Length: 131
Picture (tube, rainbow, N blue to C red):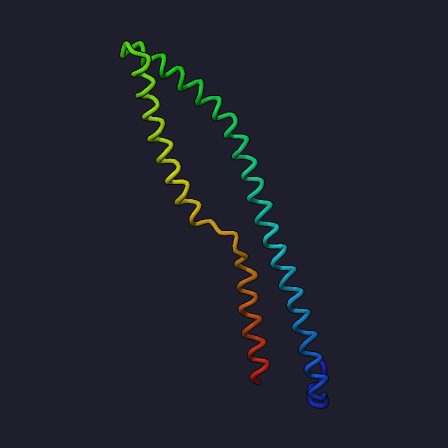
């Protein structure tokens, strides 16, 4: 860092502008890195969930049909068995959807490290300006 005792106001202002520009570029790079890491992790998770869902849907269809067939023999009515199984599945789907919404409410893609760094930088800059 140069000696500030012999610099003019113009030189000091130029240095402050360069420092601010460098800082902004570094903060932007940090922000982009952090967001890309989070998006990459989320994308992989979404791909796994989609793959699991494809297999789960097939299994659920087969299990549901088997359950309806078994319940139809117990109740003696295929339509009644289908209504009972469909109602139970609707309740399960509703419970899962409500739980999923609650879980997703706590998830954030906000760049926390970048925000903390920006707050520290703002504090340092304001301290430098005031003295």
